Image (cartoon, rainbow, N blue to C red; front, side, top):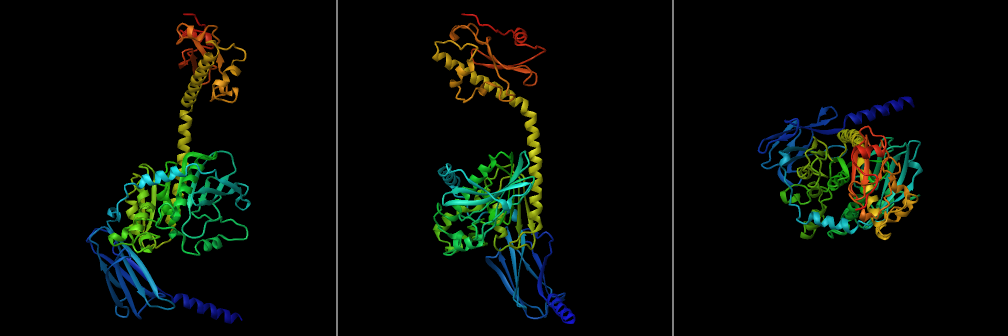
Length: 558
């Protein structure tokens, strides 16, 4: 038996070694070229570690997988390795396809060379009413019900609480998964949308981030006894989801996802444990597209988008391959589909990123699902001064380590941003506390005026004045008459004269706060309704302060 197993393992090893593969390199290591410059591809077909000398290789050069530029066949017995040369007159991606008949199956390899890709232009201009259309759609659904949160024990541990979340959307609910650190405090947050396919069924459980993973589908992915894959198959029984209801731009499948996920981001920003201004986004393919779609959202402060889909739907007009899901190809480039597709083109959303937000994009130069020219057409429209694109030479529609590296960068960025914002908040806190205090005193003055209007111009007596004035404040409790920052009650100096008869009301004190509340200053409200902060200057009582600043504690009749 042992001898048999040894022979079997040796045979398996021999089969592995004998596998045929295609290697491609370019004469420019970075795969970047100027227009009209020759790119030289070197192709090597290997059988194990030996050159493959049987059969032929079919070669095709194209404009990023669509329009053929040239074709030829190479006799591998005569040429291996061999070179293929080509160029492009306009900015774009020169794409090489190599096909080799080999055992156990035919081999296919794609490789790309980029010609001045930062100059690639959109296949069609953005519709003039693009922004207006989406503003109106968001307005239409701005009063959606609050989301439903269901605790999930399987996503909960001693450090993190997990939930299933369901958000209302135009075509029903969309579902996601939320994880929140249990420890007290505020945390940066990350939003992510998965790639095409079945809905995700969990979110990462991190001790230092709030994490929200949102699906685009309307089915519940967490039904007991039913897998997300089974629900996904039911969804696609009569046709793939991404093509449902096209070309109706208000019912296209992604419409509800865009509305619902925007709402989810707004909701997340309001949660108690989410640090202000510290939400990041990452996604790949379909998820990368949603990064572009959310680009104008002011609540997100950093983006990482890997091989983003849904870009440059009309790129075929320039002879190049559009990005997934290639709406126009599905309806044979009809005018109706062309008109709809532009409102769901991530490239048009990308043009409305904020100008200072950091954006990191990863493109596969051998990607035939989300073509590199479509990604570049979108990237080039991003107005941010802090954007970078990572060219992955030879990468198809995949996730390489660069994506995880950029996510790690984003996490570090969010943590540093949170520290900076919290430090700034602490620096500004004394000033902000003083502003809040002044505003509260102004509100109290207004309430006092309203009270006197209902009480023959007479102010309330000292005892019970808070209860008497409270109905005129709109507040529910007498805590309203305390400093918003310190919680200490304001002091009231009753003036036993009709309000309208007080002489020099701009000098007569009505309310004041306790000493030492706001960095050596005391906020004082006067009978005429104005409020001023005065430096204490060594004074310890309101009497000393009023004398020092020539203010009046007692009113005199006109």
